[in-house]
Image (cartoon, rainbow, N blue to C red; front, side, top):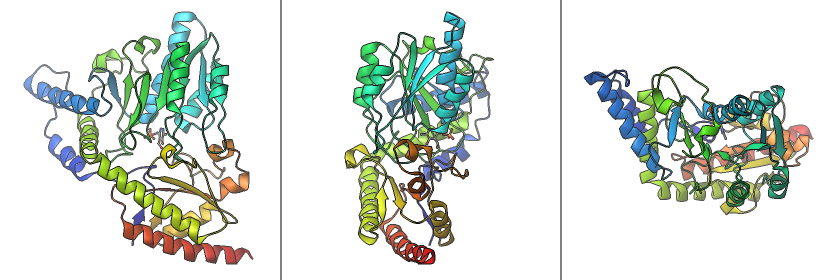
Length: 385
Ligand code: PLP
């Protein structure tokens, strides 16, 4: 049996998405061309834009399509840095957290080398950002707060209402990396100025993302790409019409079944969680205790005395795909910085595994995973005695 429980890393294409990709190859015109072929492609993009905008209840003119969530995150952080250098002649102060995805972390580190001051707000042992520390970190030079909506490794959902209040009260633009929460939970978006989302976590292809923006705040960002006038002059480059339409198709398909999908996912994730807790005594759950503050599809467990990577490979050998951390860093041998930031010991972080269910996960698959886990963990633990 093959069981894919790594949906936070990527997802298979949804059927309507695959169909849309094939159908749209017919529209080959350059959307900037004034002739009929160009106009047809342009119309496709605008239809997709309207469909997509509905997903966050935003105006179709308040976002740009990008090549990925990584590009959206880079556009905000580097855009703020460039704008600050260009308009004020000084590098900005940026506030973020210690558990962000590498596309935020490594961009912040790069900007620090270029003179930016970055404050990394700590999290507690369940992965919640310390909002008192956030409040204290704001200075007159703070140009941006960037806090992820939900964490990719633990599924912990940040106290976004409070974060929005803090940034709005102080008049500091707020960005959130919502890659893992988009279409999985009902997000609060009012009061957030920039929102990063990506296609391949929800059944669209890799290589397509978007950035929602508050039109009143877009002036604080200088574009990364200069060239043609695409995307309201905010991102030059001939639009990837086929993938833009595929992304909108995924959002439409999931949107029409969102409640069913969430209920099912939550039930299956709960079944897996209680099964693991019932079968093994030496397991530590990494993440929020409160179900409402966790993504419905994400579980992260430390299996004491077992290396996460070893367990991941054993599970792979029986057809089960899970992960030891962020897809971008799971090829590294370092333990998860997210778990370490939550106060986990190095050995606990090393023994952790992430399970992330998806729209096609079934109850039978969860039964199979629980059975295999029991066998593999007993075997791995007996080897260590
Ligand atoms: N942000 C978060 C929270 C993610 O989980 C990911 C992907 O794992 C990204 C950003 C980057 O997405 P991509 O690699 O598609 O650019």
